[in-house]
Image (cartoon, rainbow, N blue to C red):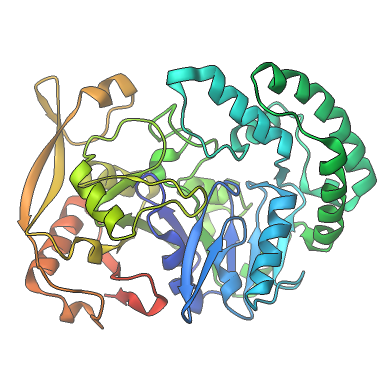
Length: 423
């Protein structure tokens, strides 16, 4: 497998972890290049459910190198908790199979308090963040006041610096009714985390280039989705990093000329978490999926908003990311429907448009233009290949590929690794 970027083509939660896990079989290195532990990838392997937040999905495979790149904002305490949990599930995690960029910025508990306080300040205009402190961490990075992964090598200096920042932080958050950070509780945990993680910290740019020069294949695991991209998403209801394919390059130090393929991942319907416009949102679809036990956030547990597949979004995402192929997940979620709708365009102020507007005010005035497809009314979960799919399911996929202008080469029909079909 050549060097490949996997990105979300919607608002995140598309099942990228499952697709990355499937593709990792032929990869040597799996790298995260942006986001933080606001991401949550759920992968079922060997009948065991693994929930990953910062660690790349390649950790589920032996003899794979996993990289947390410079573009990630890293919660040291959260990462240690994640490592401990995965070790408890039988996984081996050492400095040989997990490395952390010395330039990745650190996300601290005081960033969480700032995140929550700013949401309080926004009132009814809140963004609906996960409250994990991701935005404030990236703000420190841009303001050039952040702490980086290299600080984990010197726990004493790190704890001294954090103690000073906590004092300033607590004055602000208490004014917003948010509980202050207890330094006496935090600092011992931070020290222990730094000592645990220090052996993993290195120059990951060099490690990635050495792997590529040695002929190894790198798989870049995107977090969130195209419409949460700080530049290309439904701003301001977005995350604080570049979630599109370009972010994999800047967040890892691997230049575009070394990238061969981009896999865009989309659900067979649409979901999003948090605030912001959602043109194809449909309560009936949401109720159906929630009653099936589907569409609850891996990180927050929040019920996701659900609706029909919006191909205006997916088509534009394929264009922005330069997608060479499309992976469709959760097709089995539509098994019980008589009729399935696809949004093919929007109506905005009496005009038909085929790409999403750039402003929230315009998006909120858009109305979906649907076409209807006959459902297949058949359990797809046992299909072994595309040839096993019923004609109506194949027709649905063919239409999606046509509208996306991108071929569908991977298909998810259930949560398990073996329920991924390759065309």
